[in-house]
Amino acid sequence: MAGEEAFTGALVEGAVIGGMKALGTYGPAWAGSLAKIQLAGTLAKPAAGAAAVWLLAQPWDDEAITKVFNDWRTINLKVAHLRTREWDDELKAIQAAWPEGADRRAFDTFMGVVYHEVQQLETAALQMANAVQSAQSDISKIVNNAGVVVDSLLGIIIASEIAELIGKRLMASPTPATVAMGTAMVAAANATKASSGLLLMGTAVNTIVGATAAIIFSMGNLTALMSADNQFPMPQANLDSDGTDGKTDFDDITRRSATRSPGEGWSYT
Amino acid sequence: MVDVNTEALKAATQNLISTLRPIAEQIDNLAGGTHLDPLQWGAIGAVTVANNYTPAREYQSKQAADFVKCLDGINAGLLSVVLHYREAELATATRVQDAQKLADLPGKIALDRSDLETATQGKDLGPTD
Image 1 (tube, rainbow over the protein chains, first blue to last red):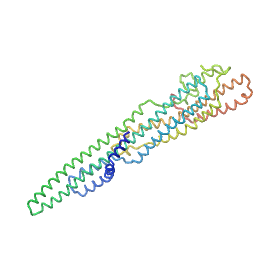
Image 2 (image 1 turned 30 degrees about the vertical axis):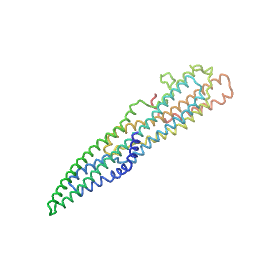
Image 3 (image 1 turned 180 degrees about the vertical axis):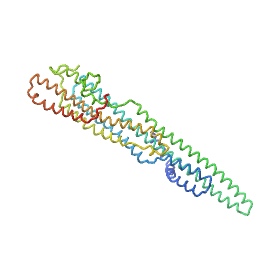
Image 4 (image 1 turned 45 degrees about the vertical axis):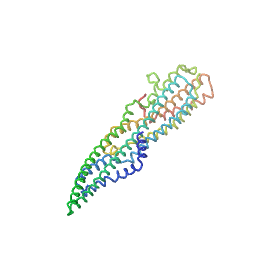
């Protein structure tokens, strides 16, 4: 299960993931304010872009998604309870009171179809729960990863800003050697900033592609649940028929076999 | 002569429906509440969720609702079986002049009829099979 893998991953990476989560939450706000301060012109655009992607990938109502996961899980457990704990006892009580004949066998067959449908509903509910959970954890993982990469890059950019600042101070020095050192520092800082800006944009693109792929992967198997031809049979519509209309519901067969010799009790065919 | 215990069959039917139907109703209610707005997944996930989750949810939700209807149908079907055997029992009793059964059965048959009517009344008579 992908949700469990994410969980195991979180355990392995330990404190790193925790830090990622915190940074993922506060990072964009930080990026936004940095862009406003205009610490560096090269920083503003990629920071704003990354923050926008972070917002786009962010699930807007995580609690509602968690509730839906819980609902599907509960449905799965309730159907499983009905199928494994209640079904057999109820069926046995009916079979005990109704000796086996053509009509009872028709009833048993009918209940077999219903039982199969119940099993499918149980499996489907579990798949719905799993798909919702994997999609949710995939989105969170990507949002958090994007957050930490953005934050690391912002850290590099800020460090180079400071280096640039010191470099400029050094360039103001009367000593030529110090001026040369300052010029080199400013050039290096600007190069780092530019490359970090590119990395930041690359991360933003990866986040879009990654998040979309992850959700498609998590949710795609749900469409298979609809294409399966499963429907609960319903005997209601046939209650008034005499069993000669070709629809073999269990109560029809009762009528056909039991009216064979009403004067002498009845016999099964 | 087949010995169908109509009394026990009726009790078992009522027991089955009173045990299974409430669970099926809870399942139906839960499935009905699993709607998710695509936007709750964020802008990037919205389209995928709308295309995959929403139709799958609707299908399974319909299945849960149909399960309740199916149980209603099983209930009505079994009650019609009970009624049928009771009528056959009455026919036999008339033939052999079983005074006790002749006194007892018409009342039970009337009750069976009204129970069957209650079981079918207002219930969705969906397509068969």
